[in-house]
Image (cartoon, rainbow, N blue to C red; front, side, top):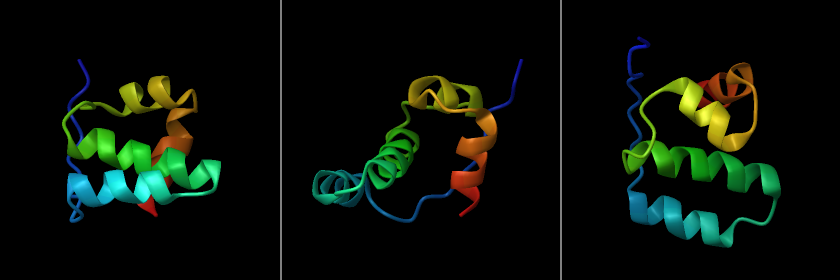
Length: 66
């Protein structure tokens, strides 16, 4: 079983949601949505992120590292 990843997101869920609504580019929306999922507890594992985003695990890991 994979272990849950630990990620500290300093922004509030409301801030991320508002930023998501105002985002214009698709890539920015995907990244904000990813952070919002993690912040709200909808995602616990890296493979869940890649499945929901339809991106590779390497891409989601790289985005989390930035």
